[in-house]
Image 1 (cartoon, rainbow, N blue to C red):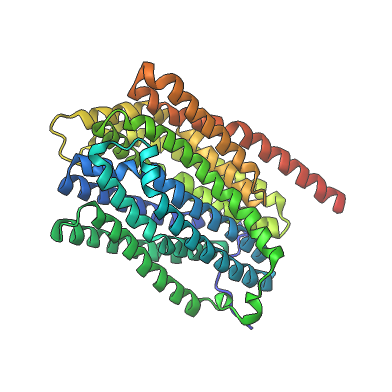
Image 2: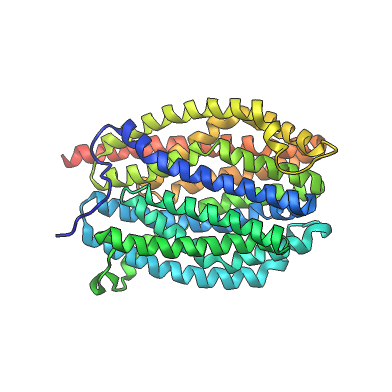
Amino acid sequence: MEIYMTNDLTTGNPMKLIIGFTIPILIGNIVQQFYYVIDSIIVGRYLGVNALAAVGSTGSLTFLVIGWVMGVTGGFSIIVAQRYGAGDIKGVKHNIAMSYYLCIIMAVVMTAGLLLANGSILRTMNTPAEIYQDTYHFIKVIYMGLTATIAYNILASILRALGDSRTPLYFLVFSSVVNILLDLLFIAVFSMGVEGAGYATVISQAIASILCFIYMLKKYPILKLKKEDAHFSMRSTKRLIGMGAPMGLQFSITAIGAIIVQVALNGFGPVYIAAFTTCGKIQNIITQPFPSLGASMATYVGQNTGAGRIDRVKEGVKANIILTMICSVVSMIAVLVFGDLLARLFLTDASGLVVEKAKIYFFAVAGFYPALGLIFVYRNTLQGLGYGLLPMLGGIFELFARGLVVVILARPLGYLGICLANPVAWISALIPLIPAYYYRIKRLNNNMERNS
């Protein structure tokens, strides 16, 4: 008999379980965001404002690609979590095998397609001429390493689906440390420019993915697949795609909105791009509790849905909302008090313009962090319940809101108008998500009462 060294989230106090499961994810996400910050500091300090702007201008594009990968692999893992919660170990193994097949196909198609379209995409985004070459070569390296990115995300997602949020943390920390060391080596020592930052990212992810896979096979018997687990099934493929594709599109739709903002921002020049990039890096660290709690909810809700415990799903949502509101207040205070100080770490800003623009951004968005946090609560809960398409509505509302704000406010308000695109988008995303959650929970309760 196999020993399944995983975490069952279908019993015990929901608040304690969510906090315990979230902490390793939060630490891992913060470590990763600190890497992004240090990476930007190294680029800014050693290569200057234009290089930082080049890397920063790819942020929305990178989010489009990586967000799709995270969404798809996260969707696959929800199916795994539901099978695990239902006690269907055979189903767990089969869905893991099918997920591997689909990830291999995704890696080949995405790498080839994005490399071919790289130049066209950057020109469409109105990338400034003075940073075009750096931007082109940096993002090309990231595309070349997509296989490593996909590998790490599917492995981490599977572990979390089975209740292990610690192992992905260990390998994420390892990857981030290696990444920073390679950044310094490639940029400061070998003078490889922004391409060096790209190679550092790809190599560190590849090493971490290989080591994580080896560790998983040795540590967890449930992840050792046999020939019968790996038989191809069109039914399983459709189900995995049915959950993974909408979640990937959810991230991609959000990213398209960010690209719209980036296109408008590119017209203001490198200083504004650098300021917006700096704010994004800082904000991503300060608000990391939100996606971390959201990732926990996807697994928690997935397992409890598989076990038929809708009552525990509702308890978990209430606990998560309380935690999110507490984190929102802390995040608001942090960016308003320390935002400008943190911005000064990124580069030598003799004119003070970058820091000045950073302060404008923080004062425009900080008060709307509760809305940002609630997006992750309701979106990930709906996904954990098995509804892949519903969360996309939030993304569609978010996309239209960002585009509308850019069109209406960018010209009369300038940079401030672009900054306001985020908070308006966050509020808009909640318009369909909150009613959708309560409607679905009511229907599930009614179904359970009829079947009891």
